Image (cartoon, helix red, strand yellow):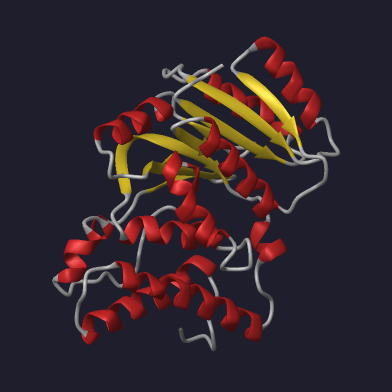
Amino acid sequence: MNARVVVMFPVYNGATTLRESLQSIAGQDFGDFRAIILNNCSTDETLQVAQRFCEDDARFSVISNETHLSAEANFAKAMKLGAEAAGYFCLRAADDLSSRDFLGKLVEALDADDAKLLAACSTKSFNAQGFKLKNPAANIFNFQESYAKGRVPRNLTFPSEWIYGMFRSRSVDILMARWYELGNPWGFASYVLSEFVVRDLVAYVPGPTLDFREGSGSEQRYGAKGFRDKLSQRLTYTLGCYRLVDKLPPTGLLTKAKFFRMCWNDARRKTRYKLLWIF
């Protein structure tokens, strides 16, 4: 079945929340999609939940990995499959939801501007206390024009959950080029997306939301523990983002210094690593 959009669900042991997340896509007001559940050798009832859902909705199907992959590798596989299967694709975690207009509004944004490679919206970030709405800062838009004039924000503020936005299939080359550079799952979503932001490749769509559940424990599992590892990851993040200066308009040393400061600050905020209690 051909469709304009493929929604990829890379999942490992997500049985308790998967059906609700699948239903959130099934109930979208945009119907021209396929959804593929990429089961990463789950040891719970993920596969059974997925298969039962697919029996009820022919737009959904399951692919099972032959061997267990790391989370990064499974998400990378999902992106490659999505890019091969349709003109637009997006990822969806097994415990996340979205507003009913999520797919339709993001498709409209990409249809309206062929130069944009990612359409993204605000994030409703949920925890036990409720939720907060995460929006991008206004100064990250028209980044290249501002950069050419010497104006660089101190921080590159946008929701890291934009990794679950709608990508144009040709964006996969940029995604894969940056996917493993950081060498660590913690903070890598913002790192990967930074190129889309500074090159003005993002169409921001106010209105729809991605509903993101906090509390996955990824920081405890993947975050650096010691000073040396924290410094190493901060530097890797900073220098990897600073290399994007080669894809920006030519400018003077002062502006490049401001860009480096932004990358360093962004590495601190996105990894949450403070060094020597100072910076």
